[in-house]
Image (tube, rainbow, N blue to C red):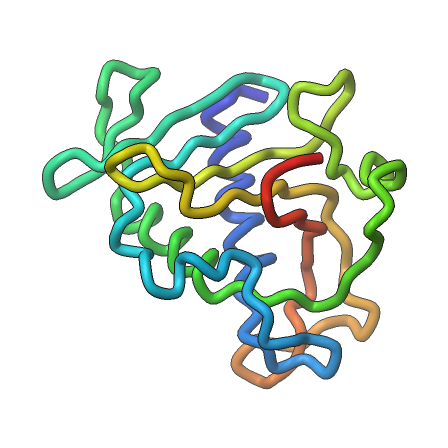
Length: 166
């Protein structure tokens, strides 16, 4: 799969996984990326890393550009949607705090052999990291899921590790 295709899929996956609004019984008010609550408009760089490589999206004027493709324009609306999803993401539950189990969840470092994870790092204009998250394996909600607007969990969820380290 081409890197650009995988990145588009990860973006969509992260969006659907992170869009939970804290309405499920097991969810908490703890944000996955708390710094984005007040600083979402400060995000100027989105770095996406996986086994296939790295893609850097940079705010350029009124839009966004792909650095690795000589500044080719990126869809600003989709990037904004992704950033809003990260800002609103809430933790459903802690699965494990044991790093030796991360690889089973697809949360090993993107540069580790056989890794299936994707790291997303958000930076401000000065290069300060505002947040990072590792997106791992997909899982289906045990309850079968319900529409987000209906107060349930999304049917499709992903294991994520705030901090972006596997």
